[in-house]
Image (cartoon, rainbow over all chains, first blue to last red; front, side):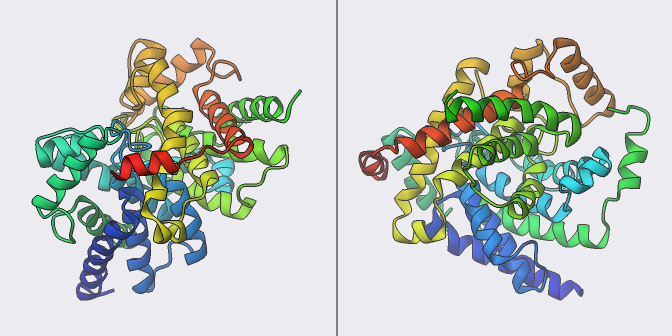
Length: 199
Length: 194
């Protein structure tokens, strides 16, 4: 795949996330679907469209830092991590054959979008992200605070494909998945890393 | 024994079994929830799709990729199962974007609030601190091993003491409650949409 092709897919992930946020209005599902759909348009299928729609239903409840409680993992990061992990492709069969397979999924997620969130926002929770981006933390179950959050997002131009956290996460993650396709983490590599401390 | 009691017991047993074979809080709490419900006749997804979801949830283990900072993986896998059972997808959000609050409600009430009562937070590290009085950085192989050893010493590999089992049991209870007594959420949607 050429650099131009990769850039086109990455850009498309951001565009789709920007489109999905005001329609599906949840960070987890919007981010995950944008990544999966952009990759599919580029000829890379993480899962079928039908499976994606079912996964979407599971991710909705993890949005907004877990049930919109804001104190769990940022929903955009949840959707992004789910996509990276799905790409890693470690299912029951692989785990039963050798449980060290799980470290491929863990390291793929932590070494890409996980570390990126830490670097950009200083944490992985919804409130870590809003603290860094808005200088505020909100309780999304408080109607007044929720309105203020929405108002702050609009005033700062955060609803859109450039500044919004979901499109940024979608672009970063799509790029990471394209890199992982070219340089996959193998079982041998993780075994070497964890060789001295079998758990 | 009621359907609920059977399913909860099965979820606890499977969670411990899976932590021994499939290893990892996110995918094990999810699989224990789905498989225990299936054992009492409630099939949220078929086994093929369950395995696809398992692949996606694996990376949410250990507070996101074993980083510890994010939501406890057991809670993530269980929350995913609850949200899946609520069933708010693209179609439902196209009809009314307020429908997402139904998923949020059940995840928060069924799991999140209970977790906070016990662990004073939702993250992997907060959970570990309450359980063990310390939290380990599982990105460091030696620390990951120490966590596994501490869990063994504490007797965490039993249905009543396992955190993954707790999360799966809460998810099963929430899902069966929801199916038997679905809440009227119109008020909730109106309130939250302002």
